[in-house]
Length: 222
Image (tube, rainbow, N blue to C red; front, side, top):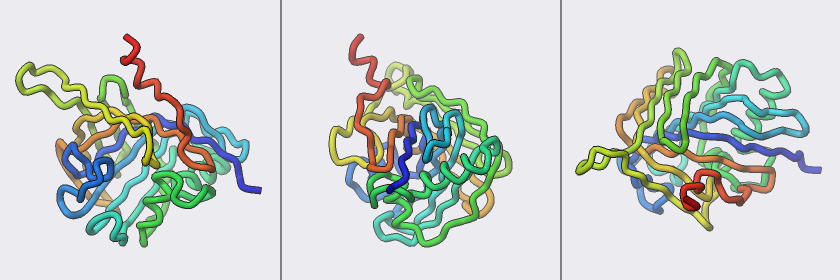
């Protein structure tokens, strides 16, 4: 029997593309290569009955050219507060394993990587407000990242940009967009400034993306 699991995470993602990231707009990368840092906190979840709620995680990726061309490198970072069973379960999910092939973003990205760095177990400091499109992330000695709304150049007010993916996505149905800056040290060294940033609720299980209305769409009812 396949292992049953659920992973619902409030996630901040910053990559080196411009705000029209090719992954979401079916375009080439901005720079001809991709570098990306995902950091999140599980708000609901379990792996084979082991609860993973409240745990933080990160996934770092680098590709030398377009993602579809392969040759990528990945490193997973798991909250040091996780016990052995939680570490195993959360790492399995983020590694894109124990699911239908290519049914979520982790599985797709794993299929394009050829190098997998050692998983790290570290303190992860994450302060993210998905509705306000802000984020402040620190993984001491590895990653520093910040996110902010794009600003309207005429009014100097936050410029609200959102992306709906009713079909065709293996990552989300709705996300908030802004700008981010990230610096990574170590095996996954990379740095970029004021580039694509995504605030999203990832919602996956062993069968793929769980399609339900995101709470981030609450503004539609006002």
